Image (cartoon, rainbow, N blue to C red):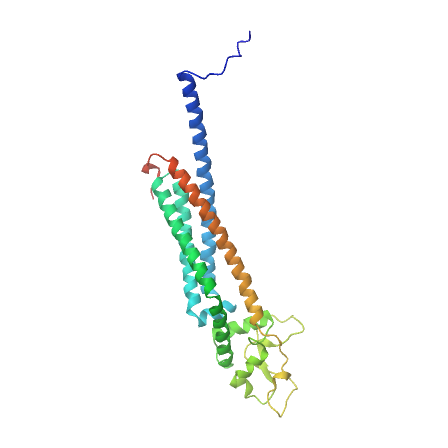
Length: 291
């Protein structure tokens, strides 16, 4: 009879201890996996927070795109930029606290992490709803900002807002807001007796020029006695409205994609923090790093 063929143990203290030991090992392994998954999620959360913060800083620092036009004329975009910076900073802080709480299994930090994640999630949903409800107002505000800018454009005055709009027209290859006739609202431009047009609107057949032309330019060899006729301007015919709105929509889609990714990570982080917090039975503050 083989000595190795013992019947399975089902009674006795030895079997009970063996089952308890196996269960304990499995539970310990599960906690470790949860802990390191939560650490990775928080690391990614920290990086995405840095992206949001960087986006807010870019809005405030930008001087050469349509964002600069909106920012100079609308206080709401500046407020939005500061909100992005604040949310990004808080997100990075929460990612950092989550990493410490996960690795060191500190229930206090895990609970604080869960509470702040819940608040951030509620704030994000509220901000998304408010932004969606104000999209129409933003589009109207853009049109009025550009119309006012074109009407008051002064070629002899150096202005960062005018330079930003010149950059937009040259880069997007458009003229005016609805179309190039918007520039007929500018009194200085229409007072010229020769064919004069916005330099940044010039329809360049060759794209070799890398210099941004500002102000008003005279069309060579096109003097006329009937005044400055817009139909004679060598400019782009299409307005900037559709192209700018498409550009904003593309960038907003990217922002919404980042926010959607953060939301998913937040929900997973909340679930993992609850799971880990339930399995941490003792609070050992000696594990918290001292700085």
